[in-house]
Length: 176
Image (cartoon, rainbow, N blue to C red; front, side, top):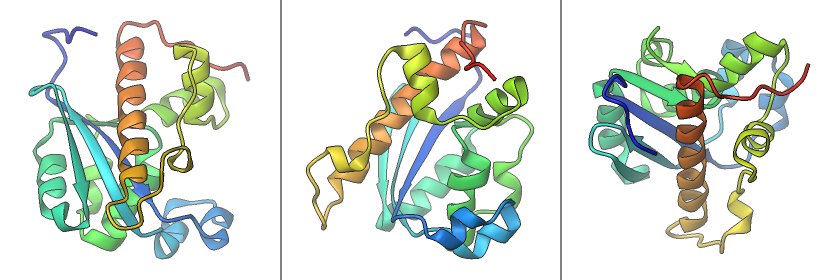
């Protein structure tokens, strides 16, 4: 997909974590989930200015946080209630970064439009005729976590494509 000159400097972000606990899932709001935010494994970004993907592991955390802070816009799927929450709780990301008005959380866009929560997989199937790829579908590497990196990169690619459809007013929304 070509990037339109009107698209601001944006970073598409996805974070991969260890499994979510029942305590995390059972909480209904962001602040009560915060103490149960899962631990970070890896993250992937796509930078619209450089047109490059970047991968981050635990030892790259400062680079990831700088990338996020420098972006004019951050595009996520469920970023406010998950990706940013993980980075705030465990890595000191300022709480205001995730809620900047310029950011786009596609899960919120869809929820506001149809009145219910959707999954990335549902949106990807509807719009891209493919499915979300889970980390368990890649060969597991307990040291390098290449499975988590591959899943993150796949999610970022799909989130970017969905965002392009949204900007072009061509994003299909699931039924209520």
